[in-house]
Length: 295
Image (cartoon, rainbow, N blue to C red; front, top):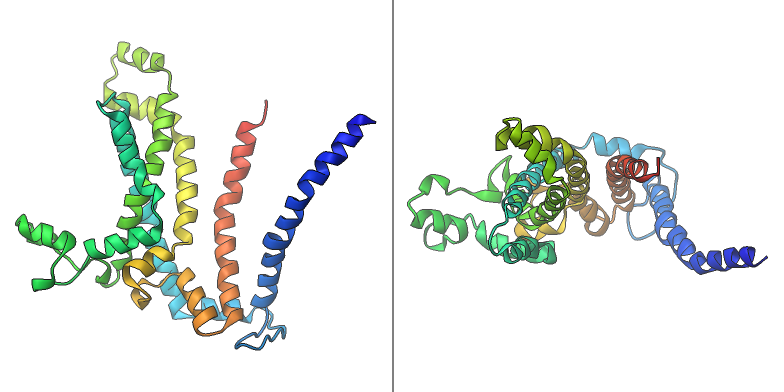
């Protein structure tokens, strides 16, 4: 009797959270799906059923093709840049570096800054102006006689979105560093010592022992950073504003919904973003739950 009472009491305690999630998460997702299948354009709601017309028009839209290309470029540069840089920072700290606490804090500090603040700073660093208006990296390169490194950064045709990814790498590489450092510290030293006794050098130890053990860490970083890159919006706006060559789905969604009042198209883009994030997150969650389940 008391066990059932405790069970009901526990259920009542979590019931408000369950209702809030149902209403403010899944309820709004369902409403967005309904809007994406309508003809709502303008301030007056129009829920006339439009089938999949909004989605078909999106995939036929050259601007959406550009958005997908920019998202792929940004994701590849951002994800692999963070993983590579974060791994090497973790390896450096794992060597017992003097002042490790200071450097660990220094590498993690950018994570405490919002993408808006990062964008404002990197907008100055990547200033493409020339002549008397040169500043940031271009001024530094010119002063050091490295003129071949001076470039137009985010205003570069086709590859400008990759320059935006550099700011994101600076901010999030500390996160991957923390993941890899925790993984490195969890590897038993006996494994490395046994490999050294068998004649393996440090490169072989990392290749055959460290990297395979860190594969789950790499997968976690890949998934988490990948879903962050799919939703990038504020960083691009802060660095370059709403420029067509740097367009991504999140910016297109904002402009369609709030600038163009095309709510149906904006909702369709939002649902596509949700699906793309779910494709990354759901398999990762299943893998995590399966790996943590008792055998």
